[in-house]
Image (cartoon, rainbow, N blue to C red; front, side, top):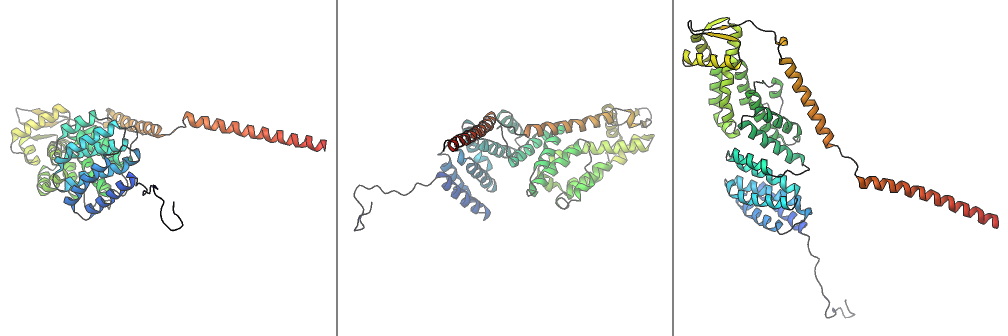
Length: 392
């Protein structure tokens, strides 16, 4: 306390108000974002490590969101400096800590960072093991869930599970925010490749959208070659955009498309010719010899890709009569897949609904009881006032 002469009494303990760790962590995050925006990745890497050391001292749920963003920029700074593998042990330890502390925001953020870390070095088996053993949080952030579906789709595509990969990538493309245009393009690149591997041809209107008109030019030309079964054109496209496909990490999937191109071209030949020699088939498909064409035709007939017979004596492929597709099970299968998609969408919508908890219902009941009690008190007060008037 101050005295009249302006001096302070002895023994008075003066201390400045202690700063909250959330405020200090937010300052760390702002400085870190500034360093990354200015492309000072080496300084950002050092400062991010200090920021992580600070947030790891506290176990506060109010710090979870800020800490998750700091870990994101930590991984980004390591990736921009070409040392992404060095941060992997720290991310694994942080993910374990977040799981023990029930930090859901940190769990999903660090899981996505680890998946990105593994996929950056094409470690798909390790990424799948981590994903299958990691504990999934009950609630999901939309942006983090989009990233998770994107990484899961990539893993499934490499594992030859194209159907699940398509579902994951399609969900990611639907849930992605409109502002994340770069992420939309990356998802579409993988989705187009997976659909081509499944034998589907993406709609031309997709490539005419302003956001995809320039970025998906290699995949548009690739789709055109697959659609008509042009093996020579397919080779030219893969050679011309080889660097781009490697940068997108889809080159190993595009190599698998060669068989689809040959199968499509062979299907078109079988529909156009009732009988054709294997040498002409090899010339039209751009194969090296008639022996290669014989092997490919036999494999396509065995898999059911074409409805034809192979005559080894004359060296010819003879096509059978075209069967009406509506007499087969193809329409039923297509109708079943659409019904399954609608049911899955309905189930997801039901799961996303929020219902009132028991505590909230008790509050509503107590409010109604309180309202009845107040009405009874008003009636009682009015009755007492009437009796007082009568006595007066």
